[in-house]
Length: 393
Image 1 (cartoon, rainbow, N blue to C red):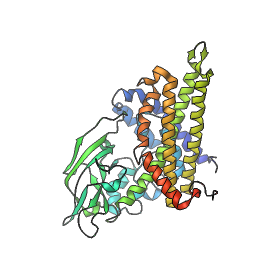
Image 2: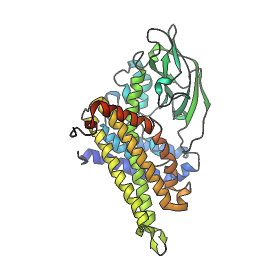
Image 3: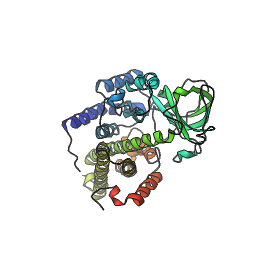
Image 4: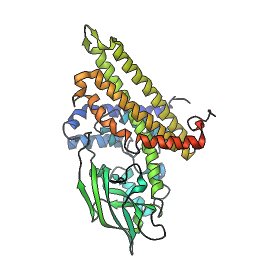
């Protein structure tokens, strides 16, 4: 494998990095204001994203997107991970998995405006009794004369407060495909769609995670994504993509933490010397950098393999490996950074404190660490150690 970047890749990386450097000074402002920025600042950031070609970075050219490779997207997302308070989420990612099944109606109604950044989507999948085990969802879809009637309650609907429409996942309650999964476009202002509450979370994001109720929500048949029974495959596609992007963002977060902790340790004096002179601090920084390097190599190689057309099951398992290792690595790095900063590291105005809270969810959402281990072990049993490296037999 190689991590040498092409000129185009280097340019995208640098463009993304410079933009994130513009976002970083706003972290404390966001932290002290429930994750929100002044409207004029948020508007300017969105304009900059459009200027730099960072809108809908995962959408293919066939859907009007920039057509970046998976590796290029990984480089961009790694940089967005360097900023706290989800400020990097202004770099948007649309439903790229929809390309094979999108209809002309859906393209014009939802996808085109999403690709150009005019509107945004959210996903209503998780329920009180169904997290990593998506097949346990209780939400239902029933056919009526001209479409479907949707019912169910969903938790952790991320970015719902910014969304114009929601992807609602349910099980068919009747008909020849009873019990199979379906996915629908649902405009968020459709009658029967309700925000039940907006819980507080450990992190301070302007993107809220609603609890939502869908009560006899009527949608036309043209809102169905693909065919009846296809719903779970779309969710798997999204999970596979987002797991790799979580790994990339965790690498960016770890890099930021190591940089900040090293700078502080170089300046902070204790007993007449900078604390970086002490072996205890050196070991924490050395372990952090070593683990970051390993996570970055794993993440980059997974992205390169996907671009090269690696088997889908292998890609699924490798994305799980990347998310598992990178998310747990970043949590360890955050813990060490808090320790290096000492009392400062426990202040909300400190980058280590924010990442310490924010990174914890990366071991949970889009499949817990335990679920990733199950996926990896299953593919190991079926494919052997070559799953990780085709040169190993």
